Length: 62
Image 1: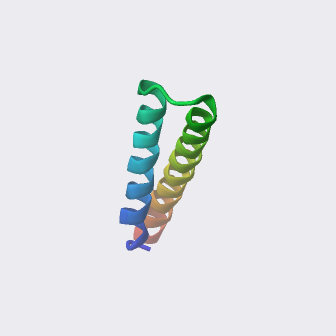
Image 2 (image 1 turned 90 degrees about the vertical axis):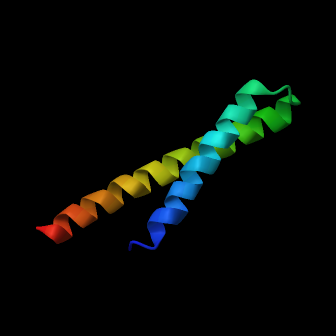
């Protein structure tokens, strides 16, 4: 399960970067909303997966 952590962290970083880019640059409306959607999906997905991973690790340690 540890091998997933770098992948999940990369997803979180890419999601955060896409969010920053979508909010700070002048893009066409379609591109802006598409980038914003990708950012939200990646960020939420990776954050939830990291929380679940931490919970499973804590249960396995006990």
